[in-house]
Image (cartoon, rainbow, N blue to C red; front, side, top):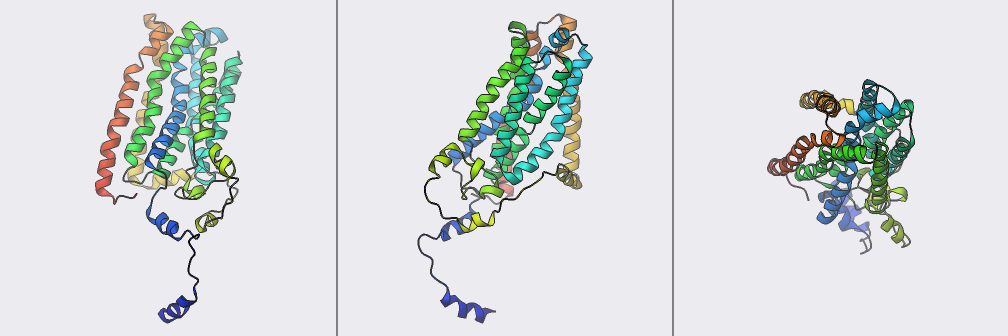
Length: 348
């Protein structure tokens, strides 16, 4: 075999300067081609997008009693819309996350936010309980996958040694919502009426959708590799589309990333439960989240009923929890990165 390699070596053609030999070698060692400034910008965008799932849940709590009065139903039936929202939010990330791994983060973000904006618009104009119940589930389907996609984006652009700080920064968005949402919801329900909660979500989510379409680059390693492979079609940002008129020669890495029609498998994530440490962490977090959801969903209604709080004051009682979430996510991200940096070999 060695003789064959030696005899074949002189017959190979020397690469010209146009051939990206250096890029191929560097792509094997450089974890991500995105600069630090680009990574920070991407993290800010996905943190903003990830805020909408908990925001849609918490902004709703102070308005439960006025919604029940306006629609002529009991608070228990309105709480059923909270339960249905939670059920959909538990299933959707498994579908959306698997799809985003294959077709790219950008198209999934765009589709889910289109669904979310449409659901908020419908919730703002509806005045019946069946419509509220169905549209709350659609709203959850559009927003609940954003956090799982954000985790995928961090895994795309950050090596394991630096991932902790980026995850902490990404979680600042979702963790702001538990404190910001009830205050906004209580204020809007008290001053302008509960439909303005959904008008507000329509406007701010529409703005987020526009920002993602214009500025968020594709990061999925199945589509753009480590960022060195140009995106195509809907995976391109507006700037990439404007620059796409220039001639481009596909690289070897790009030719290996073939696009195929893919149907998401929501059961694939269950394979992670074969790991004992994963089962332990998921169980602990599941018990905590179950208790936390039960308390948070009923807290504002109880304070309004027992203590005569207004909707705005009922929203203020969520501030301590949200503040603690923000501090914890940002504080513990940096030590985690330092620990991983010592235990893992750093990658650029």
